[in-house]
Image (cartoon, rainbow, N blue to C red; front, top):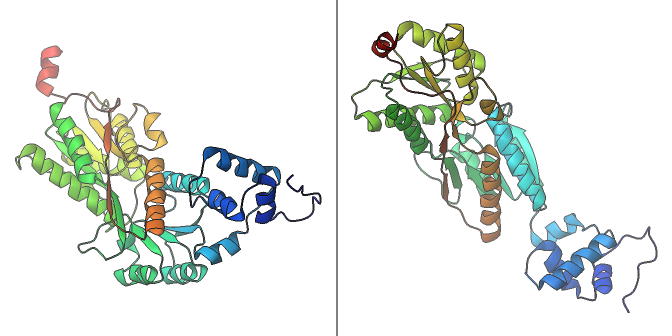
Amino acid sequence: MPKRISDPKKRVKREDVAVEAGVSTATVSYVLNRTKRLSPEVEQRVLETAARLNYIPNRIAQSLARNKTNALALITADITNVYQLDVIKGLQAEALKNDYIVYIFDAFGDVSKYIKHLISTRVDGIFVSAAPDFLSDEQLCELRDADIKVLTDFSRSTYLPDVSYIMSDMYDGFLQAVEYLKSLGHTRIGYLSAFDDSCYYDTRLSAFRTAMRRAFNNSVPCIEYGSWPYSSSEELGGRLMEQMLEKHPDVTAVIATNDLMAIGAMKAAQNMGLDVPGKISVIGVDNIDKSSVCDPPLTTLDQCGKEYGKKIFHVLHENICEQTSGKYVIPMRLIRRGSTGPAFSEQLEKIMG
């Protein structure tokens, strides 16, 4: 007969769970640490017993024994960015489900202090967003050499050994957007960007230029407007839209570097008396929540921020457990909504009018 734990104030130990469940302490460890699969019946019995006894594992002892802390870190260039917040939510949710915690750092200030702190606290892995904007290769190597698995979302001209890279397929995504506009009859397509010397916006601008060359075989010019320094707000999108239409009134479609700028661009066009999408079509990037409820709903390239965050966790977890590294490309998809339509034609308007 299993021994009952009679003193409610006594801290329940792993051995107590083993006795109560009628299994070995090793079996309890296998089940609770998910290090070895056992029969469903045994796993359920151990889990139910641990829950009933209110067993709380000693994570510090476990981390020392396994040389793991079940802690991850994320450093981002802009923690206020709406899309980045979705990524963080996805990462944290998946980490919590798998008994990991995530430390979040904004990259303002002296990043070297973050690095020293993360090394001293022995995090298992780190995701660095927009790394080239604030971390050097030497700093990434410092983290890697401290036996921390490093994942970053931007590929440099040369890849660092034993560092993993994850990125959305911007080039295919922008090609989807440009080809869709081409199918609607658009050839005068503008691009609105925050030209802030950021790897994020540099990559998106390059993807737009490449998509235009491929879709139109170098026969159509790129119309680009940007702002310096860093800003990617609705206000900036509206201001750039006004400037573009003032100099290029024949533009019939615009792609903005993110959804907030696209929404600002739509509002500016409407304030100028232009119907969206009747006179001008607009496409954004990121598929933030606001993109589906604005008027009209915004056509956008979806990076699936929360799913992207979940993928980040699983890549890091795999790298930590298997001691691997690699390159991971996440596909994007174009979500077609009410902000895009056939290209406006003055000749057709005269005929119809």
